[in-house]
Each structure stands twice: as structure tokens, then as C-alpha cells.
Length: 555
Ligand SMILES: Cc1ncc(C[n+]2csc(CCOP(=O)(O)OP(=O)(O)O)c2C)c(N)n1
Ligand SMILES: [Mg+2]
Image 1: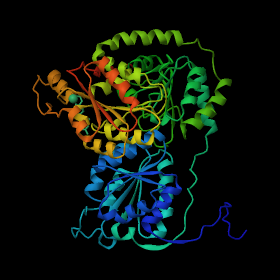
Image 2 (image 1 turned 90 degrees about the horizontal axis):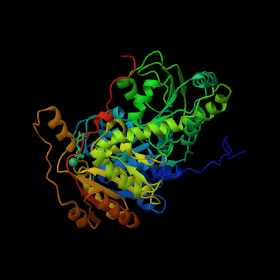
Image 3 (image 1 turned 180 degrees about the horizontal axis):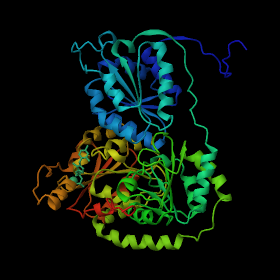
Image 4 (image 1 turned 180 degrees about the vertical axis):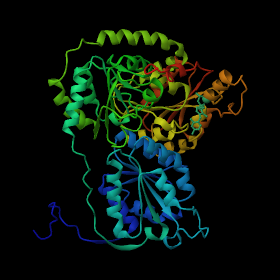
């Protein structure tokens, strides 16, 4: 029929628009409702376009570019949907760099809209404002997909490609650059509908091979990473069908609820790794097990991964299933029953082993007391945002987590200072649930200025700052391994309560777990702005014996 595209979709008339307007229209067409940003002259046309569409897309401005990028990262992690941020070129881009790197490492769909100098002068080294040598090259090292827009008509197609790239295969960030003069250039623009997700067909032979291997396993084990977060129902069924324990550490926590005794963290995972005969890794690099716990012929490995390159990176698995975890597991769950052996139920055994582990973990009593207080007040669907701090290290192995995407941990970057601003993005995009950010006094100060953002945008995040007056982790290592020669680890802190209050935030000081619990109860009721809770603490026992453990196979 004339006027219809092959898909049946109506042809939209070309409209005259600026590149900035076309870009914003395309973002909206892809379902984006927020952009986290810090403006500047290179992107003025973009911000004007955002102003004109502010009834459809909110612009949340931050006080530092890392805050904008971390907020987009938090929103992406909380929703599993692409999120965007925009900053000026050069220093703006570099200021957002740690967050972009973290988004890459966490496979998080974060779109960066980055400014550029005048199109004609790119690469000439003239010393324009914010010019940086080979910005596109720098970006290409940080993300898998990036492009520069040269004209308004290119914007819809490039935005559509960026969105597809962020979700294709192993998800991840993408970047669109646009020159200062190109943003404002006007021309005819035809909209482009969101591109269909590219999905690899399921390899049925591999699924059958995996089902046979798992089916005859005597002691199967499941290991989950961040790639399993959207396959919670399927992993739960697989675990029950196989009576297989499910290990989740940082990014795999909450896939199987901690209420199930088959849900384990690192220390029990380490024990079970030694006993397992078949392991299935789902959306995980298996880095700790492979590099620290060891491997031998008695352990067959099955991998499910969206990235075809990933499974064979460290050890070629017996079976590799390439695709998204949830549909792949659904297929496996269909095939498995006809191959599955009868196994004795493991609930009682696992509950006993969990109880034994709890006794060992009691060494971390100071950390566990605070975690118990947080868990008692944070509802099951409340979101805990982790940091590189003593309480965080303990949380990764001991905080019960009941739902997927409710324990957000920075993955292998483990970059100090990610937590507070990321949590702001989480709470901004999920105003319906309480979100708690934990930080040490070291980590919190990386983005403490974003308290102003929390006030300006009325974000009801609850932040707990554990203040020991030190980069405590560094100090303990110097004490224990460097003859107590302490250097660069003592911190001069503000009074965090006064500091937060000076921004207009609610604040409290909580000495000990009981006071923390009471402060949290009050804070979670406040929904119109941020609360900071300072918790003065002393040195804490080392968690490392529960995290870095010796080889148990192939030794
Ligand atoms: C970006 C980055 N810089 C440095 C480090 C190294 N590092 C790991 S823990 C730590 C100290 C953390 O101090 P604080 O936030 O106060 O937590 P505490 O250990 O005192 O609980 C440092 C500097 C890191 N992980 N990431
Ligand atoms: Mg500290």
C-alpha cells in the first residue's frame, strides 16, 4: 500500500529540525524519560532542545560529570533499561570516565552524549575550548560502539543503532559525539523506529548436551553473575530441579533468594566448588573460581553467556550456550527433565552448612551488626548500593538479598567512590522503593557534592557514611603486611551531620547498630529529600579470608 513501509508502519513525514532536536526526539522515541547531564557551551543546542521537550524528558543536572554518568549507571542497573547522560568534551568526558569504565565492566546500557569542538577543526590541534587529542579514539577504547553525528538527518538512525548496540550480545555502554556547530544545524529529518533486538538462535544440540551433562551430575552447582539478574525465576527452577546450590557474589546476589538455603555466597561456594562434578556458570566470568579455586578433569563446566567470546576466555567449557540467560534457561528447563537423575534433597544439608558458616562469619561481628540493622529496616524490594568499604566487603558475603537487582555492587572495577552518585540514580529512577547507599568516609567524599543534586531534585536517598577517619582498608593492609608503616591513609573529615544539614538534607549520627536501625526507620519514611546518617566506627576485622581463598582443585 502506498505510504506504508514493508513493516506496515506509517511513513512519517520529514520534518525540519536541528540535530539536537532530532536526537532528543529519537531518545524519547526509544522510551528514555530522563537525561543526567552537566551543560556547557558545546551542548547548548542540545539543552535548548531538552528545554522544549521538558514535558516528555527530564533533565537532571549534577555538580560534576562523574555524578551525571554514575546516576545514569545507577538508573540502568536498577531498571535493566538503557539510560543516558550528557557532558561537554575533553574534561567533561574525562570526568565521566570512571563511570563509563564501570558501565563497560558491568555490561550496563549507558549512552553518553558527548560534545565536540567545531566539526571542521576536529583533529587540527588548534587549542579550542575543551579540545582533546583524538576524543573519538579515547571513546573507542572505553566502549564497544560509538559514532559521531555530522548532520540532523543522521541523528535518528545513529540513536537507534546506539540503542541496539547497548542491548546486543553482551550489553554495554555506547557513545554519540556531536560537534558544537552540528547540534544547531537544521535539515529534514525522518524518524527511525527502534531497531529489533538481534538475537542468536538457540543451539538445540548444545542445550541437549548441557541437559545430559547436568542430568547425570551427582553434585551439580550453579554460579550466577550479573548476566543472570533477569533470569531469577529460571535459575530458581533449575536449582530446585537439580538440587544444585547457587553461588552469587557481587553481581550475582539476589538471583536466588537468600531465604533458600541453596543460595550461597563465596565461602560456601568455595567449599562446594571442591565437591562439584558439573558446574553451570550463568552470565558470569567465573574469574575467582577459575583463577583462585582451581579446575581439574573431575569438574565439567557449562557456560551460558550473551558474549560468544566469553566462555572460552579462561578455559574451554564442555558446553557453551550463547544467548540471553532467561530464554536459554527456559529451553534447558524443558529438555532437562527427560535426562535428569534422581538426587537426594539438599535443603537440610545446606541449612546446616549455612549455620556452620554463620558461626565462622561471626568474626566479622562489627560489620554484621550494622548489616543486620540495615536488613531489618530495608524491605525485600528495597535496593542496597554497595561500596568499596568494610561494610560493603562483608555485605557481599553476608547480607541476605531477596530479589534480583536489589544488591548493586560495582563489579570488577571495585572503584572507590562510585556508590553515592550511583545510588542517587537508582533512587531517582525508582522513587517507589527505599534505596540505601553505604560508603566509607573515603568513598563518600568522592561525590559528596552531589548532596546538592539530591536536594535540587528531591531525591529521597538514604546514605550511610561509616566514618573511621581513614582509608581503613589501606590502613589495615599497612598494619598487617607492611610493619604498620602507615602512609596516605588517615583522613580529615567534616562533621558529616553538619555537612549534610548545610545542604538542607536531613541528617543523623548513629552510634552502633541499634541507633542505626532507629535512624533508618525514620529516614525511610521521608520521601521528599535525602537523608545522611553518619556512623562513627573503629577499625574492623579483615574480611579477606572469606574472599580470597586457596585452590581446592587441581592442586
Ligand atoms: C578508584 C579507586 N581508588 C582507590 C582504590 C583503593 N582503595 C580500596 S579500599 C580504599 C579505602 C576505602 O576507604 P573508605 O571508603 O573510608 O572505607 P573503609 O575501608 O575505611 O571502610 C582504597 C583507597 C579503589 N578501590 N578504587
Ligand atoms: Mg574509612
